[in-house]
Length: 366
View (cartoon, helix red, strand yellow):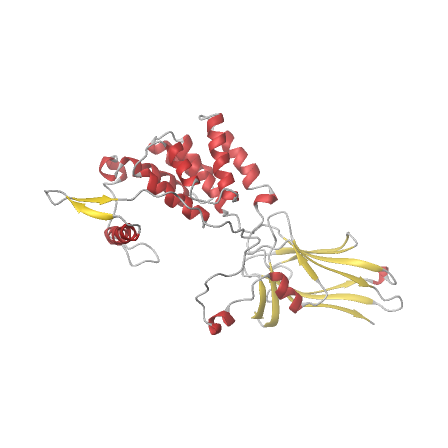
């Protein structure tokens, strides 16, 4: 949301301002100052001012902070986090120094979403110039007849819709359209002070406000919060460090198994952990039994620990499963008569479809 607000404000400013720094500063005024996205924007401005010619040095700083630091990866995002991609938009816009090709190349070479990032940095810069003043190589060879994927629009159709929406937004904001003696239209746009929306954190979301769902529609929505779903699935167990990818929560059925809990690691280095403190029977054999699964296109590593000691480390994937499911038993006899803390970790491997599917989690003493 904040990335969209920021980009929208930069585009609005670009019609009246040509300095990339001032455009970025205008966008910054439109988002909550305590958001991590705003922090990223301030960092990019700082790193640019420190050395306007070293975009690769700024890239290293952005990578270290906004890709590798877990504090900036709190809500799992599968490697396409808006902060790092927003940084790469600004990388091109700032360090490109208003050079059209350089702006595109820097944003593209930065990586991650190398389609929309250079499109965004160039889009803002091109807006400061105007379509009629762009070099022919950016406009003359466009095939304007093809329909965009997943839409009903080609290029002219999209422009028509955008114009209609712009006129509606202008009227709603108190602006108007005037004509001169020759009939040429001019937009009278009221100047407004940006009012950032309230800060919401994706890893600590507030309550739903103004929901338009009916009760029957709400019943179809997966229960929010993996913790609440997990308490229902396995009473007595706790869960922590889980991400939001791959629709986590309790599912009625997954590939032939009923009542399946789906979890996902927090990030590339931090696995989602299930834990419980138990008293192991002194005179019986206690066994931990699991039935776990993997996504058809991914795998993950199951780690079982007792008081921090690894009891099992097993890849859960195509080579170890039958129809994506694996039955696992762990003997806890060595802890007979003791109280131990068990941990089951959904540890990522290659960071592709790393979700864990928990169909059974049981302790038995015989």
